Amino acid sequence: MKKILASVAGLTVLAAALSACSGATQTAAPTAAPAGSASSAPPAGGTGRIALISKAIGADYWMMVKDGAMAAGTELGLEVTFNGTDTESEGDKQLNLLQAAINDKPLGIGFAPQDSAQDGAPTLLDQAKAANIPVVAFDTPINNWDGMTATVASDNTGMGAQAAEELSKLIGGKGEVAIVAAGETGTAALRRDGFKDWIAKNAPDISVVDVQNGESDPAKSHDKAQGILQGHPDLVGMFGTDDDSTIGIADEVASQGKQVQVVGVDASADVLTLLGEGKIAGVVVQNPFDMGCQTVKILFEASKGTMPATRNVVSKSVWVTKDNQGDPEVKQVLGTA
Figure (tube, rainbow, N blue to C red):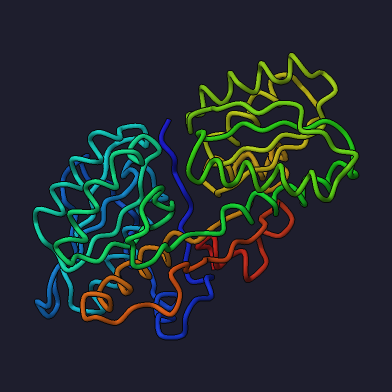
């Protein structure tokens, strides 16, 4: 099952010079393009091209990143291409897309590396650096390469910590909890470790008794949750590091009739449905639209020799529950304002 993420607009607080991204508005619903094919915004002024290689294009989360990138391209008069594979587990194909983008010699390249592309990316990115093509990592940091102009991402460690703090409140600060992660490296690992570290430092009466990898797949996450619940009958809470993980957990907890509090990261349509049904207690939501917008703007400025004030551009996140979905800030993030 592919992710169907809710629209996100303008919550992130970033550098003042790039603040226009948060004011951009979406004019059409996200639409997916075939894997490996370019989706682009028409150049308004013919001033060049920016290429983004996404972690995937089969999910509305990535389509919201695309929408933000296209909005920036329209504003700046740039052509923006947005490519990616169908899933987040096709590292070789993603590296091929990256190589093609480098060969095309754009003004700049945005890259959201899949876990399985991390090892092969640095060699290719060295080619971009040698050709004086600025590179911005978005959503996920690039491992073992420090040549990027900036990384535009949510504070994934902080999001994991935020989920841990909220879960601790829900379970009264004590009991056994477990994690189903969306991978073993990258953003999944940062969120997982942020969760675990917050518990270790702030909740001595909570024990993280199991951590499993659901591979960002609802069915696999469901199976992992089933095994955890069977092995730990006294479990009181579970954390999913992305929407697919959280959906798998919530479905299995509900099917077993367990009184287990479920929290996660990312707000998809399915997550919001489960949230409304009380099967998910809350989720930490990030801002992909602004992420795409910022990536393009930073690359454009870098192509002219202007570097960002910081190499780590951090997006804010918000805690969403059944009870606060009507709050102005939350409605803005969910695109329902």
